[in-house]
Length: 84
Image 1 (spheres, rainbow, N blue to C red):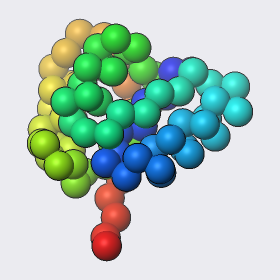
Image 2 (spheres, helix red, strand yellow):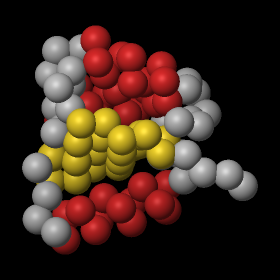
Image 3 (cartoon, rainbow, N blue to C red):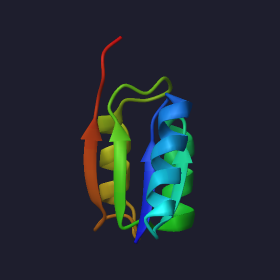
Image 4 (cartoon, helix red, strand yellow):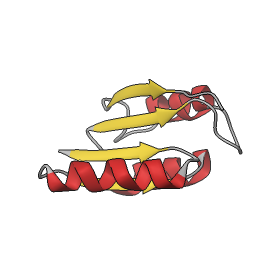
C-alpha cells in the first residue's frame, strides 16, 4: 500500500514512514498541510495519517481538500493529534 504521514513533528513522521517502509509499504512523510496535499496529489496514497494540528492549515482543511480531490477521495484517513 501507499502510505502518507502528514505531521509537523518531522522526527515522528520520518520514523513512522520508515517503519511502514520496513513493513513493505511505499511510504512518504510531509511536514505541513500544503506539503501533505502536494504529496497526496503526486502519490495518491491508500492511507493517510494526518495530524490535526498543522502549522499552515488545520488537519480538517487538509482532510476536506483530500476528500474533494480526484485520486485522494477514496483514501483511508486517520486523524492524529498530540499535546505538548
